[in-house]
Length: 428
Image (cartoon, rainbow, N blue to C red):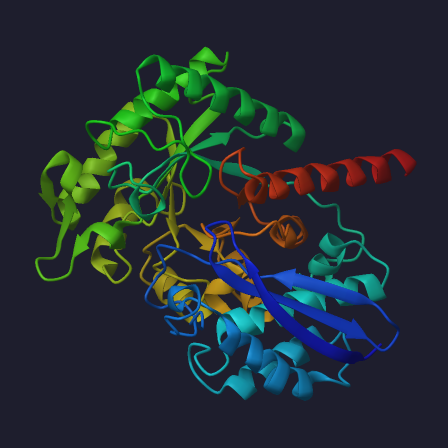
């Protein structure tokens, strides 16, 4: 089946800002669409999200330029191509863009079309989206899929809330060996227990961009104590049944001029060695299993110190790159060569096409680097990443809190996928 038409229009994301929704129709009448997310604490090396800059519309954040590129450039170039030729579709857009960071067309334009093409191709082949993603990834036909673990953000700081916390995300990570639906239940129970505890202490329980609470606490360590209390109050054992994870988003509080990490809430300025020591102290006191973006995006020395101290090939802690690697295979190759991490976060809109995202995932798998597929802080109700994560066999899905529809949509879809797979096994 061939691509007959491609269109796009503006919709709103979860922060009330405009984003792109792309629609693709095949010559056999199959219609598929995709909604593009948007980040807040974005890495400097990410592919460009094209905004209009017109202060008369959406305070300059409109995406009509990206939509115009879909309608006037991408669509005409792709019409007539086989919808199942994903690498060809994405390669054509990359060539049409002709820039190193998608600034020609906008990553929000290319990604919307790329995702819509994957959906249309899956429908064309009458196969579930996660199965088709697995095929694109290169999984052997008939290989049994395993469900990912979950990273759930329940306390928001940094650029995701006005809590005053320097560290951006405090997350729960249920231990393996349970079904996804059971892990979601555990997370929901702990989330409600955390809410009760915060209320008891007089904290406001309004939520941040990713559905986590945004309490105003006295230092950056205090949220970890609250998480331990909530886990126990919900009837679970910290470190055994539920671990913790941090997304420091350290680039946000790194001073390039001084080379210091400024933890303003703690009134501390730390160099990379002292920052590593700080994380080691936290790991010694709390069951932290993941530290995401513990160092700034260009502080390779700091990353190496941190990975050597807590990560490595067999370390207890997953030292996870996000702004550091931005789903870019070349940057991940450099990080692996430097032994600066042992796991990596994958975000489709950081690179701008499904094909390039899969290339990064394949390389990580080849090198033994663990992977997490992630949402963005500015999300939509599109649940594509749940299928993408399951199909590509990533170790974790990071989808935000178990509150707010745009976050819950991903968890609910993963539960559906798990149910479908269980039903398949029952018939076998």
